[in-house]
Length: 408
Image 1 (tube, rainbow, N blue to C red):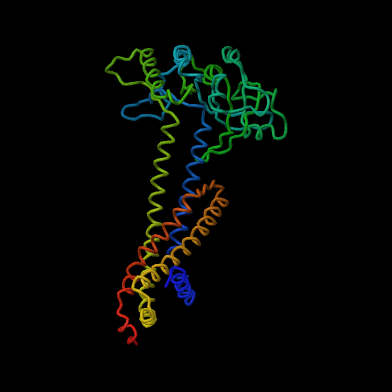
Image 2 (cartoon, rainbow, N blue to C red):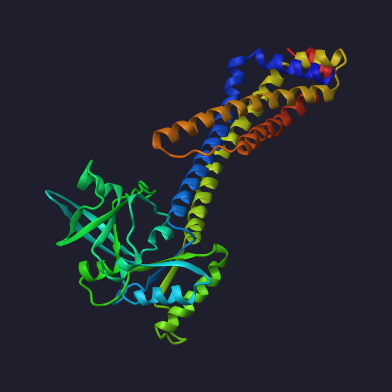
């Protein structure tokens, strides 16, 4: 018997019991579908998070003042008053070979009022370089300039959420709103960024010169800032930039060698690394669950193949009597197991793709289906069939043809 004949015999044997064959494939279908959908959803989630983090800024590095302490209790990040706008100016002047732009940031919450409408919102006091650092473009109008920051002008740029709630269909550019009790002129409207993965509306924001926010809205005589956003020339210089910024700030803050830093540095690579680790862990865990389904499916194939061998003992004896070798019998039953598992694998790949896309459309979640994952899953299903089908095939090949012909 040549290979083609063995393959035809295997196919005919499978087609004789269509329902049983389909049920045998079910474990493989579920396992492969789970693997494909989990990998597609996990990869899509990672891609979305990386995109959102990248949108936070251009080669972004963040510096926060030390957390405010009251006894043994530490407040949130950026709550201390150990960092000033002068630190930002020093970094921009002395580290220009590493840092392309710097923006001190002062955050407050305030009520916005226009005529009979009001809106509570986050006010972010920044420098004129903030749009370049944060990758935030202007949809209409313009951003404030360096001279307006220096003079603490009462001007602002608003997000699309604020524009809709205060102006609806009117053009906000050139109009005046009150932030608290102070009038501010709207210079422009920011392009929409939508909600981030934490559900926060990024367009519900007002940006104004940090000098104005500090003096007019906070009423502070100090120049303390909540954080600094730095845009590096190249992320390859990240570690060097951290060392240089740390050294400069320690010098400016007159910290002795035995004293800890009174500031903290963060960068997007740390956030992406953390998210990547969590995403990888979840993918591994879910894939392990899917692998259990494949194991169960493989055991199901082995069980059905053992039943098939028992049912076809007389057929095996007859084939051996007319010239089939033990190797032919071995190949026949292994091929049957491989065909069952690969058909199940192919159906599983299709079901996994459909499932992933359905979940993605319902949850508005990006789905990334890699061709390699589908191919590897299909090949793995073939391996499962060969592995679990070997023992039944081996038992069939070792049967004595005389005993087989006498079997009732």
